[in-house]
View 1 (cartoon, rainbow, N blue to C red):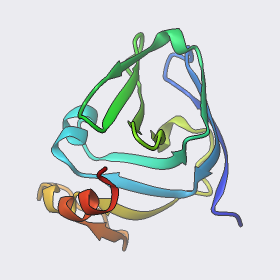
View 2 (cartoon, rainbow, N blue to C red; view 1 turned 180 degrees about the vertical axis):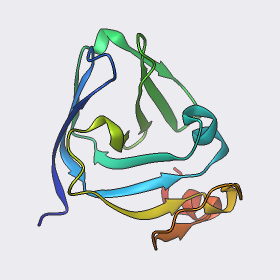
View 3 (cartoon, rainbow, N blue to C red; view 1 turned 120 degrees about the vertical axis):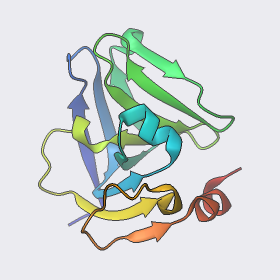
View 4 (cartoon, one colour; view 1 turned 60 degrees about the vertical axis):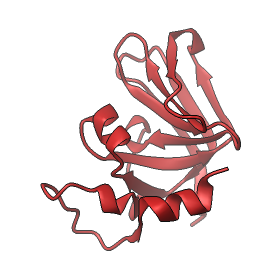
Length: 139
């Protein structure tokens, strides 16, 4: 099985459709305080690289959440659409937007040092602290 595939999905109301030609099968969780505030819990997302397309772009709202990243959402139903790194144009898209879930593997967690004690995943995963994430990805 390939590490990537074409992923297709949509927001809750269906006004926005997303397609990623290199969607990873590896699901990651972000426990940073901003993702938890944005989603109401940890963000579960897949790396879709930069080859991502959207239909219904007029319905997309964008929040400039930091100097290096932005977050997209549907202006109508509020669905979280993406976390995008500006410099590399790399999209991390919530796994729940995609049709089908049989090929996903939950295998990594970031900002593990910010994870609150009130939840815990049982999967064995690779874990990175916030400092490790910034060392690897920050411009």
